[in-house]
Image 1: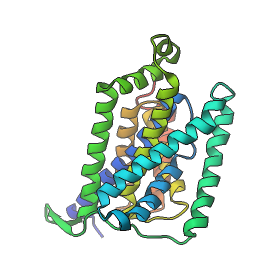
Image 2: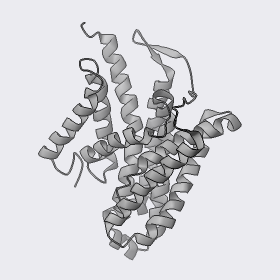
Image 3: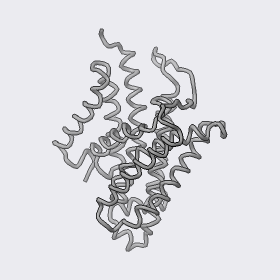
Length: 287
């Protein structure tokens, strides 16, 4: 059956919505690596906490966006506390210890969610229902909201990193930590805030993706694979690279569904990763 223009447009919008949502997760992941030089294996679990946290607070708050904002703040504070309690004491030691600690976060957080909520998948209420007619096709509002919302949050992240004192300190620490410390940058504060912002971004991404993909204790595993692919393709430590790569991966996965079985989308993404590493080992925007 031939592919129609309407199908192409739908998959194009799907790819943008998926890509921008993954960009939120990947931007946080690359922010942690760029500033702290740590690969946070448990970043997907903070995404999971954002989804379950939103489900819990919605009945009490009543407003999806206020509930998501409160959950993002809560997850960010929780992430900062974990960084202070577990990662700060081993900061100057072998980097392998930090990897082991973040891997331990996965086991602890997943088991915690299983004990509290069980293993059955759950649905998350959508922030907006209904559809919109776009160029002759019917498209769900929830995906349009995901595109607009993720764009706004990413724009706010760039404004924060480029315009605020703390954001500039983060960028300086990522470029040269020793020089930044010499100039008076408080690295402990920068590290904690970087971890808090990164985990809050993962929680916000859950608000955009979970109403579409659903909620389950293992939901962080699938999304973190995509996020790692994005971070490597974009270049480790490059937020811009993470966003560009996320859009490329999102569009690639969505468009291949038109001509190939759905399971091939992940294989195509991994193939793209291999090609980029062969041509430019540092990634598209890596140094």
